[in-house]
Image 1 (cartoon, rainbow, N blue to C red):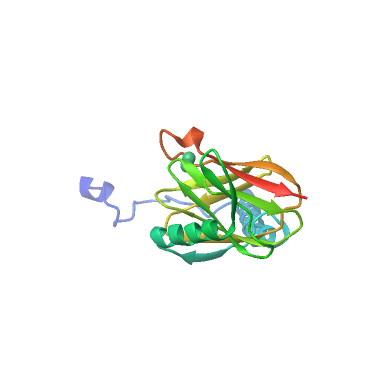
Image 2 (cartoon, rainbow, N blue to C red):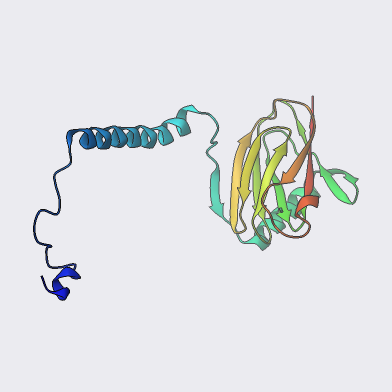
Length: 182
Ligand code: CUA
């Protein structure tokens, strides 16, 4: 065999250079394949049955437009102020807004327990993470997209909105507030 042949990917090497897969190898490939299919099927199954991936209503939105909607929402239903932030108490069943920006959540929401709202979330500048503490709720907040969720608060209390996506020097101070009344 010449040097060219030995180093070629096109010319077959001489002699027996491969053997068909043995019984044990075929068995393991079959097991691995079936397991892959089970995991694959679990994704849609868990989405529908797991109850942990809420289906949001997504739409594109210019950050400026979302800011205008939020400002209008604040002007319409503002009931007070807390540390310079408006406290907004929207009527039951309404569209409610929360805006993420470096490094704040705006405004403070005051909601009623057992009432449905459509919560719109978006960012003005960059990626933030909406994490409702101590409830285990987490959403990525992406600028340019309005992520709306149908929510029914089922616990009254004073909740914190914590940013869970690293967004800059003020990330750890990016804390918002949601109040739920009986
Ligand atoms: Cu916003 Cu981290």
